[in-house]
Amino acid sequence: MAVDTRHLILMLSILILSSCASHTRHTADIKTEDAGGVPFEEPPRYLHRVEPEFPPGAAAAGCYGEVWVSVFIDPTGKVTEAKIIQYNGEPGCGLVDAALKAAYASTWVPARSNGKPISVWVAYKVTFGVK
Image (cartoon, rainbow, N blue to C red):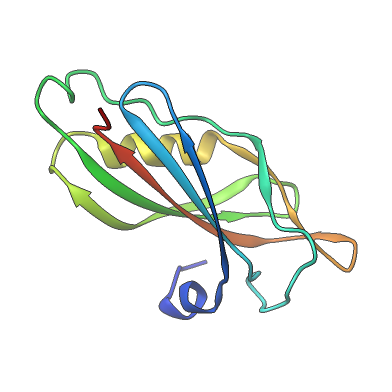
């Protein structure tokens, strides 16, 4: 399923800020709209968040940047699709790949609508190069 502007605009957000190990900061911006436009009572939340690893040598090379990732969480809590929606950083440092790898490895407690788990999109920002 493709991420389009309609999905990103329609989704409400709750900002969760946390710091992560090794030169990264992860900000989750949890969207509140499922793929079919059905609102939900319970937002998705991390069951197991995998922190992106700062690529080896990236810090020494002076790499830094922000990666916005959008993930599609199915009703079982699995990330079935992950896309980069924006990247502001140094090219060729491996930051995008690190963010996507962590996104696919993370698991979620899915959002619920009418007492049933539903699929939702979640977008969040990972900042690499935090001092």
